Image (cartoon, rainbow over all chains, first blue to last red; front, side, top):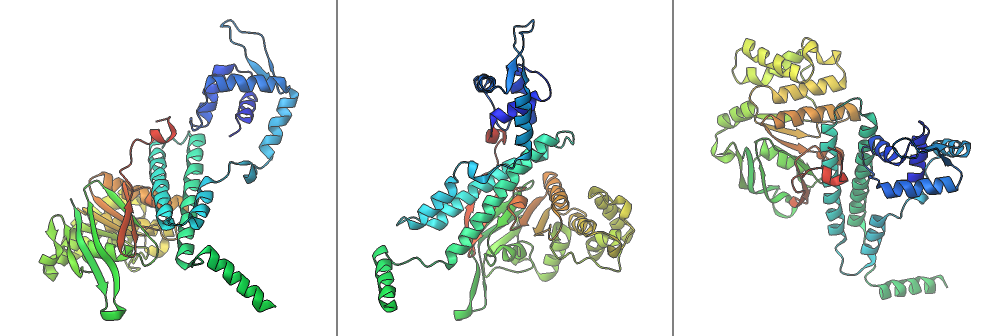
Length: 191
Length: 237
């Protein structure tokens, strides 16, 4: 999640100071991504450095609000119309783990799949409890964020089901040296 | 414990062609508990549900409903227990086309010998529970798929059903209607029934208190009871 763009989007509503930004961020995202105040100020300092926000005079309470510059307004407009590339997201540790499990001797890959499936469905159960409790129709932002997490977890379970079905049909090469020997044999046959 | 399976095996056929649908399954479902059963095709999910509802009997092991071993009951007693205490929701709705919604929902009670008037009164209350009070006089072909599914649910919940068994109850319904069906099931369980939900959809299984995973007739894993979900996000109640 880009805190930078999150803060810019909030400032589109009007000038705000650090604590207000943090509270609004948590309110908008159902506190799915808790922010600490340090992150807010560091991000504001970078946004100011890049000319995307400008500080306003301190108010009576000694708080300094920030407002968007034209450059900041343009940046957030571009952010909203640009799809998020999957390649910008962190590498999928689970896919890497399963790929390695397949090629590591002595690993029970079906057990790895099942352990993950149980954990992911447990997460889904917890998300579903939260959904049950959030029956307030006005809280659409929060419900949509929950739905996003539900759909992601569901997709992961479907992928795990797919992995398991593929494993049933999969016959691994008996050993790396046997695979090499087989490849050599095929090359010989071609000649 | 409303439903209990102890050391249940179910084998179809004999000799080399024998299929071991269930191999030593133990499962207990208490009042107020919804258990989802997941597993690939052929893992034994539907067999488990049929055994739980007394529609099939184990090769070895025993199934108890409300503490009664089903193998100790004669056919009449078993049929009576099924009509009174067990509600089924299947993917195939099996609503009778010539009966209205309220008549369909009242059918299990009438078959059990209850007076028509009393049965229909109870059925009307259950239709209200599933949000169909206004459509009680409609025939199935005058209702949408989602409404028909609700009638099927009402038929499964009508009267004093303490055990609700559902096999892919959301069938081909769209996700919103499917969720409404699960909310109904959840509500009845929260009101004190025991429920077993067979599904291949993780999103639906997530409505359960516990998810049991079957593979080749064996329970391979179970989720632990759901804790406080706030821990998941570290946040909002």
